[in-house]
Length: 161
Image (cartoon, rainbow, N blue to C red; front, top):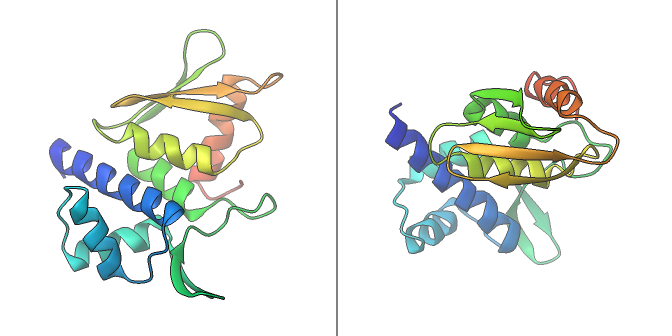
């Protein structure tokens, strides 16, 4: 996929994650309509692939059906969203200045990956700062960039949360 396509996909998937986290969306058509309202065009089959790649689940609750991001409990295995985002968007992980971890992504993809790291609520991570193609991961006190790098590599491989 070309860089522009990767950036568009990253923005669309980030928008889907954000929408599902904030709104009650029960169908892929509802997701497609909300994405279109944000100025991002996508076919039904593209939304279907995005839902699958992001690991979204359609659940029943007291108010009916809705899409959710599974795997957010602390004891849960790594979320499908974080594992997918790391494998899809992380081009490199390296220790930056001081104790910050630097993650490089394709243009336009840093925000989606940064949000996935933040949503995973990793104990070792205080937070992230995402630009267009670079993310700074800030370790919590007593943690190192190298330990977070190893942890993210294991998550991407499906070995841990």
